[in-house]
Length: 235
Length: 310
Image (cartoon, rainbow over all chains, first blue to last red; front, side, top):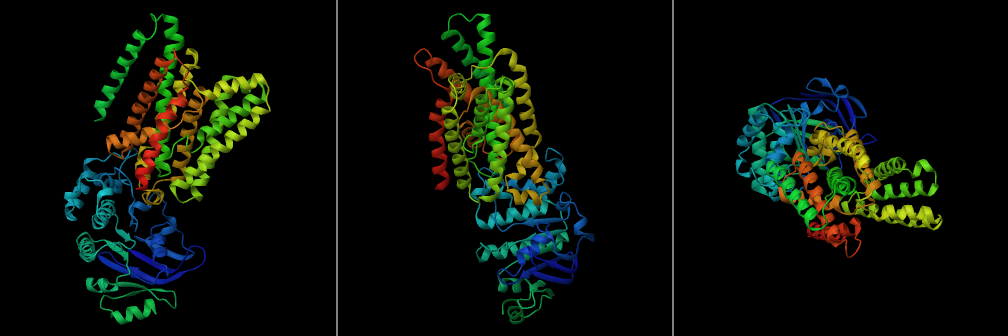
C-alpha cells in the first residue's frame, strides 16, 4: 500500500531517511519518535503537504510525484492534530465535507454519499452526536468525528497526527480500539503518531520507529519489547 | 428556512417601501419615481447585498469572523484610487466610468495587499490591525492630496466621500446590476470550496481544493462588488462585517449556499431599513449612510469581539 525506496524527507534539509519500507493494508501502525524527530514531517510527506527531497514514494502503487494534488484525496486522508474551531458547524456537515472528492462541482451530498456517511456514523457509534455543533463537542467526541470525516473519504490510507494527544485514558482506549477495528474490518492502512508508548504496546500493533541516532525510520513487529523501543527512539 | 426567508423579506420590505412612499412624500409622480426612487431603491439593495456577500467571503477566506471589506481596508483602496483619479483632473478619469474603474482597481490591489499580509500574520486580530492601519494610512494620504488640490476637485471628492445612495442615475442601473450579478453569481459558483475553507486552508488543500485559484477568485469578486459600491456610494462601513455574523447566528449553519443567499437578503434589507430611516429624518438633517451604518455597526463589532475573547 505504501512503499518507499531510499526516501529522504525534510522541510528543506534532510531530516529523516526511510530506506525500504513496505506497509500493508489491514494494519494499524504506531509511529514513534522524539519531538522534532520527523513524525509530522513523515505524515505530511505521505499526505502530500510537503515534497520529499529524494528517493521514491509509492502510494497504492502509484509514484507520489505523479499524483495531482486534486487526486490525492482519493488515496490518502489525514486527521490533523488540531480540530478546526468554527462556530455553527454541525457534526453531519463536518463529516460530509470528507465526501468532497466524491461530490460534484457544487458539492451536493447525494444519496450514495449519505449512505456512506450513515454507515460510518453507525460503525463509530456517534449517532447521538448528529445535530450538535462541533464547537460543543468534548475532545474525545471531536476525535471520533474527525475520524469519521476521514473514513467517509473512503481512502485506502488514513494518517492521524497524534489523535490521542488531548484525550483521557478511556477516550484514548476508545479511539485506538475503534481505529484498530476499522483497520481490520475495512482493510485500511492506518498510520498514527503517538507519544504514548504504553498505550501503543497494549494495542498489539506494529511500530514505525524513528531511530534517534541514525535518523532512520524502521518497521518493528508488534511484539517488540518496551525497553528496545525506548532505547531506539528516545536514547 | 430559506424558502421562508426568500418569501418573506421581499414582501415585508415592499410593504415598508410602499408605506414610506405614501406617508413621507407628496404624491409620487412618475419622474421622481423613475429618476430618484428607483435608482435609490436598487442601489440600497445592491450596496447591502454586495457588501454583505463580500464580508462573508472574506470571513471564510481568512477564517476570521471579524473580517470585512471596510475593516480590512478594501474600501480604502477604492477611496485612494478615486481620490488620485479625481485630483489628476484628467476628464476621463473623473468621468463615471473612470471612477468605477479606479475604484475596482484600488479595491483589487488592496485585496492583494491584505492577502499578502494574511500569509505573514498568524492571528486574526493582527490582520484586522493591519487593515485598520491601512485605512488610517490612506485617509491621512487622502487628506494630504486634498490639501494640495483646488476647490473644484475638492468639492467633487468631498461629495463622493460623504457617501450616498442618491447619486446613481436611471440609465446607469443596467450596467450596475450586470456587474453586481457577475459578482454574486461568481460567489455562488465557489460554494464548494467555501464550505471546505471553513476547516482552514490546510484541511482544504488536503481535500483537493486549489487554494491559490480560490483565493484569487474571492479577491476578484471582492474587488468587483466593493469597488462598484464604493464608486457610487462612497465608503459604507461595517455592513460587510455585521451582516454575515448575524446571518450565521440566525441560521446556525456553515453551508455557504444558505449563508450567501441569506447575506444577500439581510444585507439588502439592512441598508434599505437604514435608508428608510435616513429618508424619514431628511426633513430635519442630512444623515450620510456611512455615518448611520457606523453608528449601528461599530457597537456590534465590539460585541462580537468581546464574545470571541471570552
